[in-house]
Length: 138
Image 1: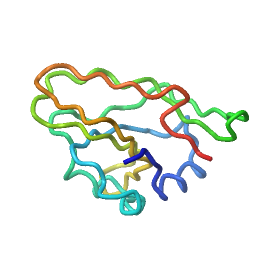
Image 2: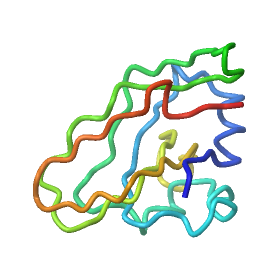
Image 3: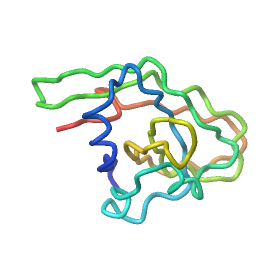
Image 4: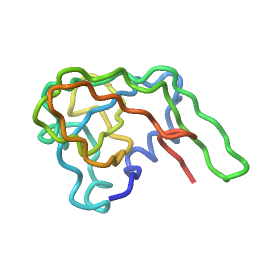
């Protein structure tokens, strides 16, 4: 499955100052069933059942929104999340970027980031956002 943005995320991005947004990353062990189904997930409470136990939720720092005229898109990027240590057992299938508000029921999801499955074995896991940002709005 490809990485994509939820409809709520598109709405939020158009209405929220990315510099002021409290964006975070949740790793999940199960990807969405389909892009169409996932695009209708609006809040974190719709994905917590798939959250990778023990990974925690990473605060995204160093947010940068860039206009890319060459590729006709806006690009949102952040500092790569810190290394996850001691994950044992869950397979990481991807992650959701969301904007923290007060709780899971009112914190909107912005996008799903697909990764090649990462099988954990108790070691460290380091994730890197792609060059050009983790989110492209075209």
